[in-house]
Length: 126
Image (cartoon, rainbow, N blue to C red; front, side, top):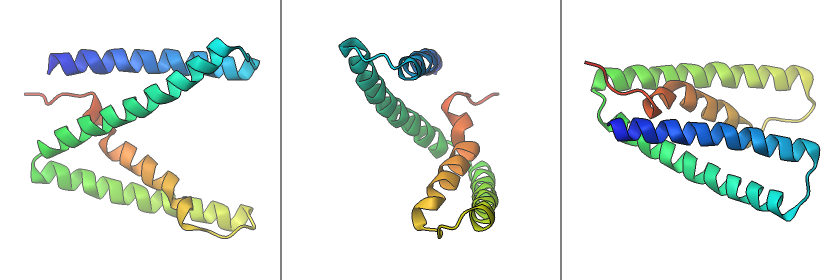
């Protein structure tokens, strides 16, 4: 388990350093071939990082007992309903476009992240 913690720490450090560097490259408009290769590599890294994070969450979710899983599932549903309602109200009052199914992707992702993201880094205590 200690190896996974050190790997996730390294992945987080590389993520934040790459995000800062990519943001700087994009903000300054640096258009060299090296910066383009860095951005492409960073996008590939992000995809692999997301897949590794999903893997960690799935493996640790299998180890949860039913009560812990039910609590997280309830928290996910509560966050999804509240974020979807807030999104719908904002769209209803401040936008003239109609609501489509894809508009619920952001509340879905945020609620999944809020309910299950701590499983990526924390290890079971006791």
